[in-house]
Amino acid sequence: MKRSFRQAMFSAMELPEELAQGAAFVEVTGQHTVRIEHYRKILEFTDRRLLLQCKDCRLELTGSGFCIRSYNGEELLLDGLIDQVHYC
Image (cartoon, rainbow, N blue to C red; front, side, top):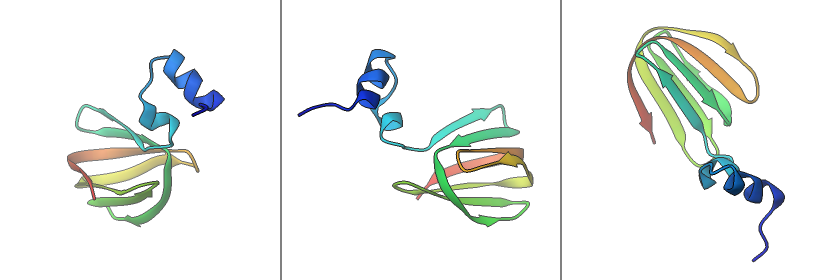
């Protein structure tokens, strides 16, 4: 089976295969900042809950004082007190 250039590049860089397939990338810094890449759309947002549609799942974050610092089609930055990150 022939690998794509993207898959070969990710393999050479020793990055997880899931990233090459477009899986969501979630980076949590402390308990107050989350950066999410490769989400599809925002399904719900309140000051206590963020629900995102990703390629193969939904991603739910709960907590308090949520504020979306920035977002575009590829990346979302969320500030607030994060209690839970849940894949559903």
